[in-house]
Image 1 (cartoon, rainbow, N blue to C red):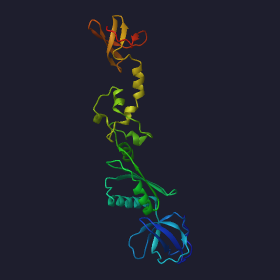
Image 2: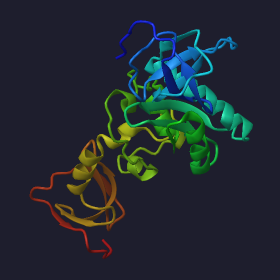
Image 3: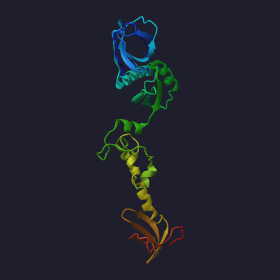
Image 4: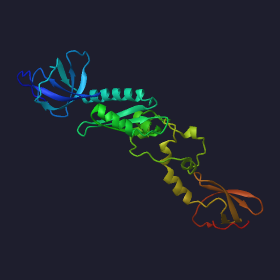
Length: 271
């Protein structure tokens, strides 16, 4: 918070100019700025406003008395720093870097840029150079397609807002094996989300299918029935049916009820 006092033309402050440089400027009236405050100011000979960080008051006599100044809002600070950063990346042939989100901790003096790129990038040197220009600590975090979808949002094939945006705090690992365990054998593009990766919801019922599968015999195991031993040829887990092949070449589909049915899953003898 700043407090206005009666006009004191010689009140001076030391500033760090966001974009590069330092200066000592005089205020048209005295204001009690807290060190680390951000303000927009206008030099007499410059038309555009400059974003600066107040370093503190100075006993030096300023050569310039400001025409005007105003307190900078957090969104304005981030917008200005992002604009400078994008220009720096462009000038340094990093045009494939797309900044998708910014987070600024004004108390700690840290701005974090989350970005995507077509290649894996390590921007430590870029961050160090920008830190000197922006007068804050700069961090870059490269994110993938799933994290990008979480930031931008969207509607899934179910008609609801995508899960990673709506409620998921941790993005689960999803592979083609995850789909196969649930007897889904579609091509990857048919079971992928708007991020282009396999849909997170494929994980939701995985434990149910694993539990269900544990209650059935394995393919190839031998089951003892009223007709004699039969080898398990097919299983329909959801319908709870199995198809058996008998030694005489016949096949029969039967309901699977593990109670009272003897299974010899380890045996591979012919039936």
